[in-house]
Image (cartoon, rainbow, N blue to C red; front, side, top):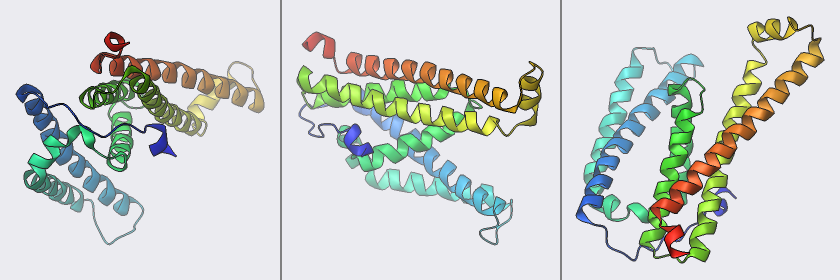
Length: 224
């Protein structure tokens, strides 16, 4: 269902410039080693916290650097193929990658949506360039940009909802709401209203950023 939401044309008909291929190479040099580094660290940390394996905290950095090595090795082995096929990547790769980095961005920015907005912006640029290289006509490029905007907005909205619901468990927030003279249900109602407002605010900005970035990168406006 998610893959259908952001379905795009994977045929790359135009040739990338040397500058663009160099930039893509630099992006890949960052994405894959860092992704495997963080993924291995997160998995091992979860195992330690929830006692899923006989591991200690000292194993977390070791496994993280093992992940870094794995990412570098894969990058060296698949370098040429990944650079040339950058704009034809499958959604089965793009979607988990976007979700993973959304979690990272949320953690890095301590729950603020700034990181998610940046990710949505980058996703829009990628989809726009992907459509441009596939030589998509406006009637196909614009719906693709809209679907991508809906996807990034859904991810952002989902994360905001989860974070908002988690704050319901905080005693400090409950005390603040109680200071307004609200009873238990009144406080929860106000909290849910705040969450709903935050979801609308963040998702509208996310959709706008993603669609605008896709339109700019894919030159949708000039083709229309």
